Amino acid sequence: MSILWYDILAPFLILILFQRVRSYKIIHAAFPEQGIWFPLIKAKKIVTVHDLNPFIDKGSSLIQILWNLYARLVYYISIRFADHIISVSSQTKRELKSILNVSNNRITIVNPGVSGMYKMSPKKENHEPIIGFVGKLTERKRVTFLLATLKALNFLDAKRKWKLFIHCSDGFNMKKFKSLSEVFMLQERIQFNTYVPEEKMSQIYKCFDILIFPSSHEGFGFPILEAQRCGIPVITMVGAKIPEETSCYTLKAQDPEDIARICIQLIQDQDLYEKTSKAGYFHASKFTWDKCAKRIIELYRRLLKNVP
Image 1 (cartoon, rainbow, N blue to C red):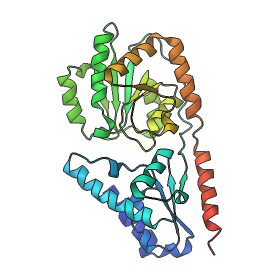
Image 2: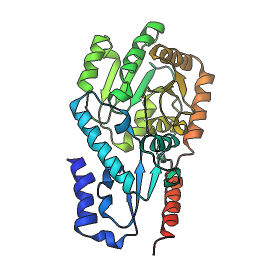
Image 3: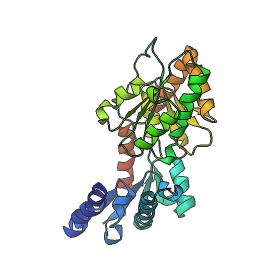
Image 4: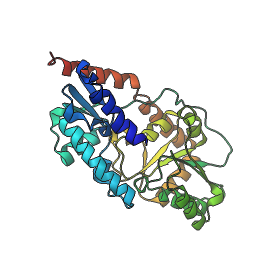
């Protein structure tokens, strides 16, 4: 219902049915899905593209396949009829050019910001180490890597009682992964949590000692920077398509066993942990919503120069 309302009905009511578009000089769709009515709008049009996942992920379920088909259609429409496109990362810009043949002069990169509520706090001492994950339980996120990593940790570092906290935005696929945790005989070491209000997410990250982000593809990767703002080291996978803007200060692993070895090294080597934590924190602190807003306003002004 939220897709039907926010992406289709609300834009139609505001922009088409009420004809309020005549009083606007610029229409900015925050997501491609909201640009479905672009062909009927005469004002200058901007669309923000966060990723091109519908063109990259094939999907294994019927629902996912149907959603990808719908999303591809909407992406084509909004991008085709937009006067300008905002890309959230250099990687998404490259994909816009290679997958949809968008010309370079139609794209401006504007990195999103990270909320100031994410702050570094002193590392907890003398406790059972916790590896964490934040995101949806989809195939692209490769959550099974987390289970394999925890199993490897229990074998390689049996003296510590490693735990895994998984925080997902909804309960989608949770039953499946709970069943897998039982197969791995890890259910006592894993905690699943669904929706957490944004204002409490800072506390969630601070529960982690390390964030593992095994995703194969991201348009930006907010959890990486949010964790780093809290001083939490982040591990990503070698070869993953994650923008260099967000992944450049993460530790790279080849496979779940390699993730486990890096986790053990971080916990055992305090100097390495602090060095990784500080480097990530200072990098993530560069991403602010103030900078993002200023760049978008500059783009508005540039487009308005040619508007009577």
